[in-house]
Image 1: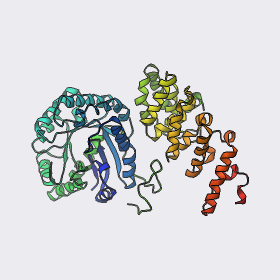
Image 2: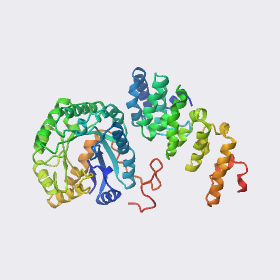
Image 3: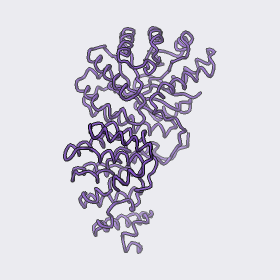
Image 4: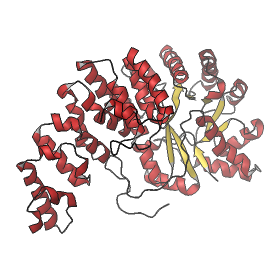
Length: 287
Length: 200
């Protein structure tokens, strides 16, 4: 099973996770920019984070045989903080950097006017920089938030095929399926979706335009939920090719629209360093 | 290295992209902020015949920088931001382009920043013709010593013949003595600069 995790916050994860992901078949991933738990209070906090998502974290992933890409944006929660909003002025520089495969996560948290403004502005940036968009749907009042997100996407003029609406469930999948946007599902240990519910959604709606992610971060989450969903699909009678569509071909097709996915074979360079620092701290066996 | 010699080595496709980019930068200098990071994807990253170690994207970025219709503080500030918001490739290009910019000493903070890193790509680019002319002797000597430390060939340092002085020779000899005391190798090119070192 080859796996592309289209949404995982590796900055919050350990090298043990990278090793376990590689061993389970994960070969590529996308890390969206999001909030950090601790609120940011200035622009430098964003730019250092963006630099890490383009620089250090791909290097770290490569040391474990995994190709790392990212999406960049002002996230919905911090779009409400006037100290954070000016990051939109430097974002265009970053959206032209190699390894950036979409604008995201954008969307709604509490559906405020400030979130409306940041969401619409960043959809325009996606059009200007010829990038797809990753849209986060809110944890609270999710159905209304998803409907409103689809309206904002439609008004922006971006083609729905370049938009991925994430964190969907049984209640919200139908309206996104009709919209023509791609559908993302975050499989969590306790909240959001689980593997068996995901299998039921795939039975009902098919594998087309569906992406499954672990959304693993600094909270209770599991970076192997993609693989576990693949196994649940096989146990429920799906074919290997269905699993490959959901866990590899669909994310490759969606993010491939950026023209910046780099999935050529990873050549491991045991002696490589990032700006003079290595990750491995001594010799190790190749994966 | 001149803009003409760099441009003459570009392929047709890179030249076409560059021509469009230069036209944009000439009327809207801020356009360089998004063109600069895109140059590698647009024009490629193959090595150039000249200067040694330069790539196509280096040349394209340096040409964009040299074409900015700005002078003085606005020019040095634009270069500093391209460096700040760039990855190693963009940073290296800014360092390599400094010698073509009429900014006096205003590029030195970028040179000093690069010399503080442990990234050999940036350290060697920092010790180009701009540093050879503008960097003060103590910082320049320490830059050279850092090259020896990080395995950068001394042949990559601009102006070494001209700026080598007794103090730098003393520092290199001291480095070599420490290495010898630890039973470790001394890079061969250090021997050429420190006349009596073979007695160690």
